[in-house]
Image (cartoon, rainbow, N blue to C red):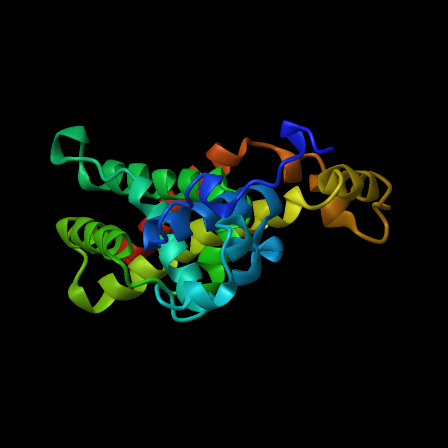
Length: 222
């Protein structure tokens, strides 16, 4: 005789699934990206996380590339754009770019995603508008502003993508440092002389210096 605990539950007794929406899909996708990185993300996994089939996602996103662009734009909503009260245009531009980097580093795989994905969402456009405005505020002529914005953004994205790659490796710098320490001064005199300096500085110090170098170059290159 079946006990009460062995009764088969009807579907009506199950908790109702949350309705599908772009917001729900993006939240699930970003959660998978955080746990598994860009390589572990797929429409199938997003659908499974939402207890639905992949076909149902196409009502909200055209394909995986469309989803990736929406994910990137959603994440970029956290980029801080400083007000004029926060200092001169260079200081505010540096602050914005550091915030951009911080956001890209906050989720594993997001740096790689930014390197390969073009987003035209509102948050992406908000960031681009701010960078262009700050460069123009600095007196850089319009013929150079677009290239300058692209170069500065690429520097930040490249740093984030590099950090993403290192996350998947076991002590990559440790192995590289051991190799350099064993290099002969006779065969590689420059590397041998500078082997310790190659590792100096924190990531924040390095990116700040790189941004300053780029801005100085932009200001003085016709």
